[in-house]
Image (cartoon, rainbow, N blue to C red; front, side):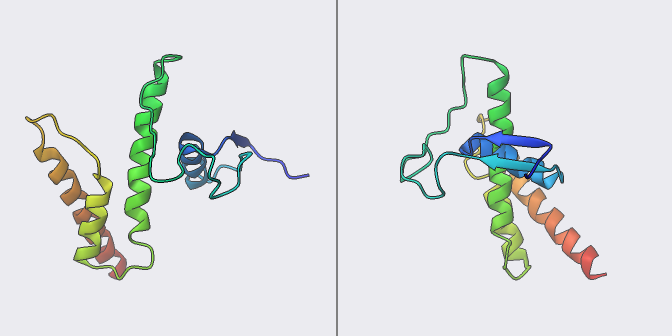
Length: 132
C-alpha cells in the first residue's frame, strides 16, 4: 500500500494549489478528488470560474486564498515558458502572466508594471547566468 507524508483531499482550486506547492518543496504528497480530470461538475469547469477570496468560517482563509492565487499566477507564468525559446519576449510574457489580474489602488498602479518588468529581468539574468 502506498503511504505519504501529506494527503490533499479535494483537488479544486485550493487543493491543487496546495498539492503543487508541496510537490515543489519535495514533500511526499498524494492528492485525492472524487471527480476525474475535466469533469463537468467541478466548480472550476466551463467558461465561468468562481474564486472566493473571503470565507466567514475563518479569517485565515482569506490570507490562504490570496497566497494560493499568487501561486496560480506564478504557475501560469511558468507554463508560458515550458517549451518556449528563452528570449526577452518570452520573459516579458511570463512577467505579464505573473501580474495578470492584479489591480492597483490608483496611487500604486505603477507597481504592477514594475513587478512584471522585475520578473522579466530576473528571468533574463538567470538565463544569462545559466549560459555562463
